[in-house]
Length: 380
Image (cartoon, rainbow, N blue to C red; front, side, top):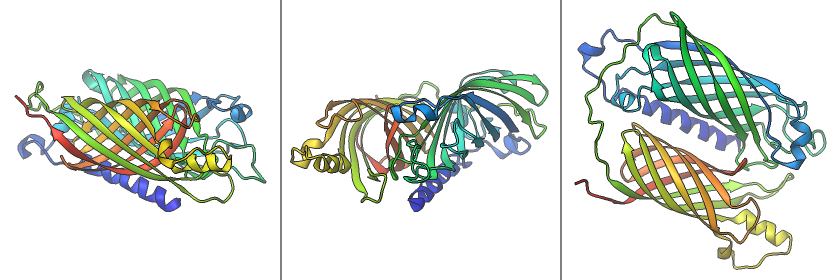
C-alpha cells in the first residue's frame, strides 16, 4: 500500500511539473526582466467533520481549526496556457489539525494546488476556485484492539483532496487578505479498511505576503479566443485493488470502462457526457460471504451515465464527473457516483492518469488508468 501511494504522489508531482514547464514562452526580449510574483500565505480553516455514517457521530461533534501555510506564485502570461486559463495561481500547501477527537488523531497534509480565477482585477485581486490533490498523514488509524472506535480511516497515508471557493483583496503593497469556503476530503481509496473517510467543510481566513518585489504585470498574449474545437469520443480504462475487511484479507480487483463524448468550448475547459461500466470483484465476494450471491459475476457490472467537466492546462487534464447508475444489482452505496481525475495527455491517443471514485462522501477506490481517442470530428 505504501508503494502504491508513493507512485501516486510521485506521478501527481510529475504531472504538475510538466504542466508548468516553459514550453511556449514569449520572446526573450519581452521576458528577460519579467519575474512572477511569489507569495507566502498563512490561513486558518474552522470547520467540522461531516458524520456521514452512524458509527462516526460521536467522533465528529466538535468544531476545530486547521492551520495552513502555502507558497504560491501568480502566472503572468509567460506561457500561452496561463493567458488561456485567465492567469491562474499555483503552489504547494502544508496543512495540519488536531481534528475533532483523540480517536481521529492529528492530520498533516501536503498538496499542490491551482487557483482558477472566475474574475480577476488589478493587483491580482480575484475570485477563484482552488483545486488541490496530495497526501495526508493521519496519526491514529483504526486498530481492532487499541482504537476500535475509529471507523473513519484504516491507514496512516491517505489521499487528500481540497476544493475551495476563495476571494483575494489587496490591502497594502505586497499584503493581501484572503477568505472563502473550503472542503477537504481524506481517504485511502479502500486500500485498507475501514475507509469511511473524513469530509471537512470549513470557513477560511488568512493573509498573503508577496516575497519578491515585482509588480507581476500581465503579459498580453495573442491567441484566438473564439477558436473552434472538435468533438472527441474517448475511452477511459481504470483499475484498482480494494480491501473489504478490517482484518487480514485478500485484495479484490475493481475496473472501470467508460465511453465519453467531450467538447472543448474554451482553451482551458471542456464539457462532456459518458456511459460508465463498473465491475467490482469485492461486491461479489461480499455477496458470496453473505450467501446471497446470484451469479454469474457479469450480472454485477454497474452501468451508469455521467456528466463531465475538464480543465485543460497545457497537457495536464483535471476532471470532475458526476453520474447515476441505471443498472445496479448490488444495492449498497446508493445510485450516485462521482470521479476526480488528474492525468497527462502525451498526444491525442495517449493519456495516463489517476482517478478517485466515490459514492457521495465515501471513497470507493483510487485507480490508475489510460485514455485513448476513438473518434474526432472535423472542424468546419
